[in-house]
Length: 332
Image (cartoon, rainbow, N blue to C red; front, side, top):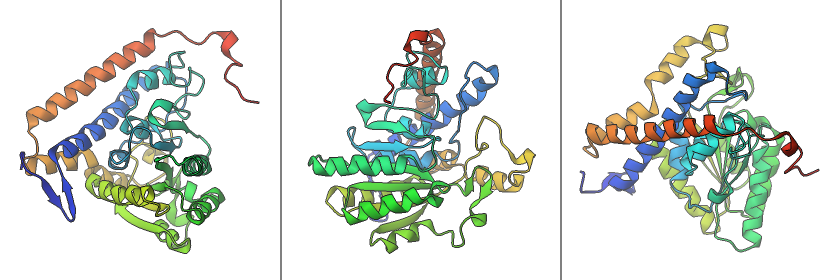
């Protein structure tokens, strides 16, 4: 299969695409695991919201986006930035509060930006990135730019009125925007079943005469297919789509530790999802289909490790912002 194309339903996936999927997922996983390793040193002062277990969604969606397509994210946005192509140096520097960070050390983990790659900012406000993404999409349409906007949010943000107002407007104006709900079933520690009577997020799209689809968020190919269809629909003037990708975060709402021991969720539930690890499953799939070899995968991991080590060294050696910079770059 190494020289051929992999047929997956109606999709045709090349080895290059499949290799990029795996590299993107592994890059996110190893990046987040490094934060878990370093955070107890207390040199990173900002809160961190990790996406370990959710890597397939960012990878599958962003592989369908062009460099200048827009991405809006939330407090759990590391993976989205990495999947869109952000370098690690300014991200780690931001976590360490350094002047070389992507937000000059003033934003921390929840306020990331990479305008060069279309990431105009992540918001710590639940649902806060949704109306901003719709606004950017409206601007793209009015300026006749061939840009698609992808907005990532969680099932907790689906509870917010901003989602419904924004999706209604996007559908009314046929905006080129893809709403991606990473449904990990928890808003902080509140399970979806305690907040939503139906728990069928993707069905909402029908009420706005728009496209909606629910996929296994741990299956990167399923996510890729849904995103490709939705991005293509948006680009040709078909309006917004709502992708609900069901997944699970391994760590607690915030911080490097799991929270089952605090009674926030059952350990058996976590164990079930850990067994469904998206990176592990995709690695096994690629080997089974002879897409790649263990040696090639080890080489990918070694390259990512070198990138991480370089980024951490860069961040630690970078200077802190000067006191006089405190009020710079503010819009009041």
